[in-house]
Length: 350
Image (cartoon, rainbow, N blue to C red; front, side):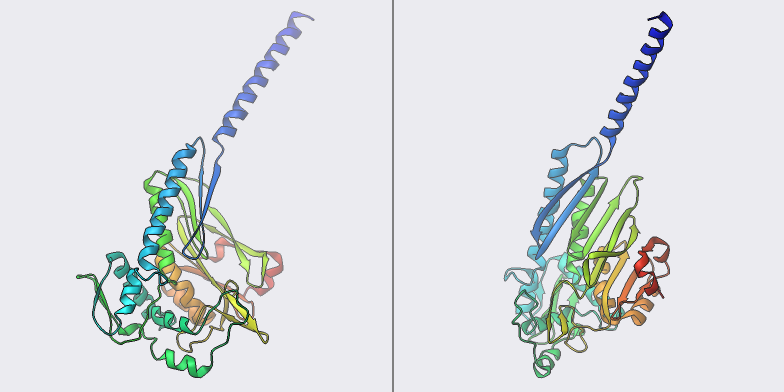
């Protein structure tokens, strides 16, 4: 072997070694997803954290702190715990003001705000109808009569709530009134959990609980792409939407429901009728505020595509997608450029 050949081979070897080192270095810097899940708020809460060259123990501790924050807030907002602030407020309906945690008072005020701008399509007092509607896995559930619904419908009135934010009290002006913040508190709680992660120096992550999600990236990472589920086929994604540092909430008639005599009865009740809302199949709302995002997705589902989209377009920083009761898709003006509909669904776009 000549000296020149040896020199060339040595050179190639050095280049190869450098390439391997660079490849390993790039691999080590590649972002890795860490996923954690826990049953909370009656659903699976998922926390996903992305990072490169990260300390897994630190990430695990941050996720645990976020789960603990969810647990703390669930104890305040749950309607299923006798010692929660919500249960204490409900128990004193028509009797006296109840001192509540300032966070609870604030979310109740926000719920009333959404109730007003939606013309009552979202109403936190609709929870009283839970006495006769149950959307568990029990297929033998009795569909309540219109007479039974009418009796409870008289107690659905968000304007009967009096909030004193200065003294942190809530009072119901009539006995029998019940509040359920399930349609707004989950968004608030998911948002608070995301803030816990950020305070622990987590740069990029997702907190998801049922139909509510917060995505964040405090650096310059790629935007998140999230699929929109077909409301009649859980195995089909009808499209993808690009998200940045935002909250996303989806309300649909396909998660908690029963079918009786060919009719779908689902858990999103229309406060004006006391029966499941019929104008939509699914609604996705996007904004930077997870609290209003959660409540608006319910309100717009009840309002339907015409009134619902008009409300979306009137609100600054709010975008949305509505699938109506015929399966037709409508996207808000600010969401269309971020939405990619699969070919099979394009004919459904207006």
